[in-house]
Each structure stands twice: as structure tokens, then as C-alpha cells.
Length: 135
Image (cartoon, rainbow, N blue to C red; front, top):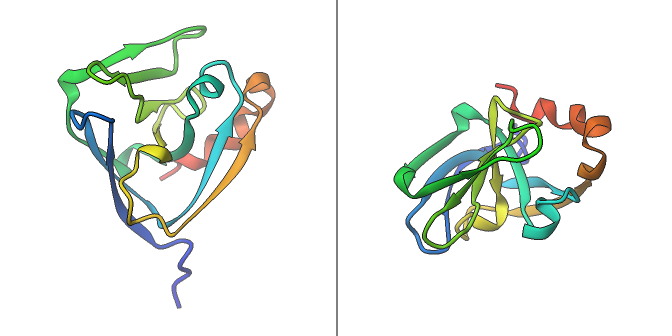
């Protein structure tokens, strides 16, 4: 019998104005990380980190604006119309994507569990996230 927690579904989501739309293959039962780093704590981003192959940008590439800081490895992508960051390339998983669970359309998430992640001390804790983008 298949474990329902491991069953992947196709989630759809996007920014507030609808210019940026994406799909992501991930479990219906999501465990997301709430990070306390300087940018995540200000934006309320809830991380669903997935392999690059699980994510597809459907529309809005031309609407995306990039912001980088510190090491420049993380590529924070915002809709230039409404300002929402619905996904980005995280520093902890540059081979994957971090999706903001709050930007997923309703209907495909059966449960959401939120775990705290200490991003203020990123260097000591980043390895705890690396497995999340593994194929």
C-alpha cells in the first residue's frame, strides 16, 4: 500500500495579481519550514523546498524581478506587478526551488505542518535542508 504522505500531487500557485503562475509536484501532506532569517521573517515565507524537476514556471517569466544580497547565491524572485515572492532559488538548495506554501491554490494541500528553521544561524543549520531538493 502506498503511503499517503509520500503521494505526490500537482499543486498550482502564483502571485497575488496572477501574472506569475507555476505548478509544483509535491506531497499533498506538506511539511514546510518557517525561517527566522532577515528576509523570511519580514515576508512570512513558508518554504516548501523541492527538486528543480518538480517545479514548472507556467507564465510570468517576464514579470519576475530578482533580488540578491549577502553571498548572492539565493535568487529571490518577485512579481514586478504585485511584489509577491511565490518561489525562489534558495541558498541552502541552489539545485532546487523553494515554494511559498502560502502562494499555492486551495484544494490540493491535505495537511500543512510547519517546522521552525534557524536561518539567523544559517551556516550552522543549512545542511539540515540539503536533502529536500534531492531527486
